Image 1: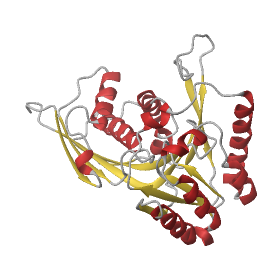
Image 2: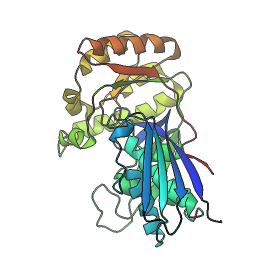
Image 3: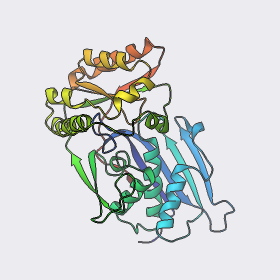
Image 4: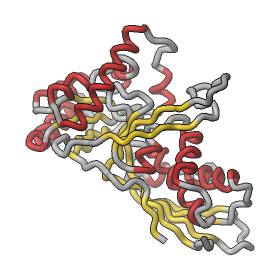
Amino acid sequence: MPETSTVTVTVPATTANLGPGFDCIGAALSLYNRFQFSRLEPSATEKVKITVTGQEAAKVKTDDSNLAYQAFLKLYDRLNQSPPPVAIHIDMQVPLARGLGSSATAIVGGLVGANELAGAPLSQVQVMQLAIELEGHPDNVVPALLGGCRLAASNPPPQPPLTKGGQGGGSWEICDIPWHHNIVPVVAIPDFELSTAEARKVLPADYSKADAIFNAAHLGLLVRALETGNENWLRCALQDKIHQPYRQSLIKGYEAVQQAAVNAGACGMVISGAGPTLLALTDVTSAEAVEKGMVAAWMEFGVKAEVRAIGLDTQGAQVSL
């Protein structure tokens, strides 16, 4: 394919874990960041020029440490090519450090943008593998790239040793999970941040066999509940013993917001990604009451939150030239 001079990549926000699916399941949401990549003249004195607009634009780095640019460089490095000087414009609609996959949008945006500028030499699967390498786990980057709700399982190579995280140069099996039309995600985005590093720090190094069995059973049930819309299954399936019990204390008012969501008709509430955004799953008729209940509950703790029912994105990263 011939080289392109300007490409825009639109990447959806994601919600990961969905309770028991820690680090392996995620869903794309209809909230987007846009990344525009334009080649500069080869004689340009700057390697990269980054501008940012939109929500929390001031918090985004505009030097060569910018995550989208780092991903851009990673792809050219994989191609063994020198990256062209580039102007990157980012329009931010996904809030930072809130558990909605903002870093995954940057990684996917940077990789897809670079691949398109280079003439699309890498397949979608190769781009996905690079994204997982950069992010460290698949739960956000896979749905951000592919759309929909996705479960990722590592397929390690037959010979040890494996690297940390079970990747070890192996491949990934990606399974799309049908999402019933009557299950509505309601995201509650508070006005405070929580870094993924901080949220990971509170997790234990080891888990009991009982907790592992509990999560395996509930993840299996979650997959069926999402597909069928069975509300009793969904109520049970959203429980988790791997990450949520340890992270709840980092999120002010968690229990009150959870109770308010359930009282208003939600099947349950989980931490979106590493938090602090909370995600309730409800039916169409209860969505508005759930929104209002979560806002009011957090207000009691002096926390302002943007709460809204949101659609599932089924397209993933979209390219326009």
